[in-house]
Image (cartoon, rainbow, N blue to C red):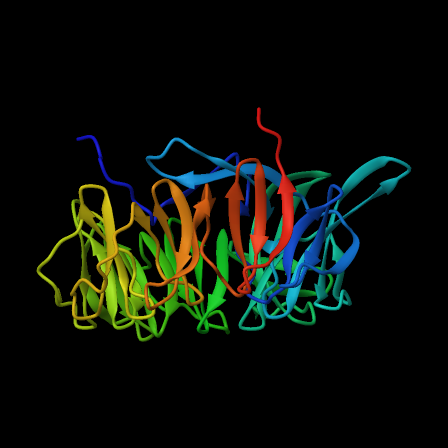
Length: 390
């Protein structure tokens, strides 16, 4: 069946390689490209960090699923965004103009080195721990990687007694000790991280102890004490005692926001309370998460609006597309142009842009003709890219 409505929840990024992503920084320093190199700016557009960082970036495209227009954007790897006042930067080494390899260094918001450069990749810090990838080599050929964690001093934290029968253990020569490793591991969230062992996902605590004895088909991080898990192809929720709080029965499920969790049953969106009960008999072709007391919903006939927590229409205004409230504002589209509204449904910025992202921690991206601009909460344009039309 052909869709005649647009799912604003699905932002698609094209021409993204590897671990590249699009994030608004949570710590008011944001990566931008200046003269072909990565630098960091604050919310006024002032360059704060500029030290010949060699962090890779690509030009990608961003847009809405179902709409043909796509807009150019610089795509940075996730590790290029500050977290817990730290960020990983890439350096290269070699001689003359010959690059022999990459090294990664962790710095603070003043540019001071916290963890010296090494060929081992360090991810974003969360709960004072960060993922580090250990390359497995045969001579100089990397044939696989193992994931584990380091602390803010760069020390390995999941130490274990060596056991040649345990394939998850890795002997680290620098500390003459074995460490617990995984095929994949995520950032920590509320003291738990998602890891992949064999074919199942599981959670570990800060000491490396597993939450579940059997694992899950898929998992999403803990938030407000609950995590999303997939069992028998359906999503549910568990608590930090591995108790199933919301039975797995949904095609898709999202975390609780403002007291409600959004679900998708394969055809419609709806909301449940913390006991798993459907709090509203109305079903929507699209509904966003509740935020600041409101959820964006598709009303039909190419119209979006907002409902309140009593599931009543909260405003008489109608929009062609509408996003969740973030940082106090929601992006909306009217007559093909994007702007922002506040929580009183008054225009903070009148619809005027070809495309726009959510505000987050003081920043938002907006596009107009061949320009990509970063704006702040004062409506100031703090950074501009010019992309030539092809």
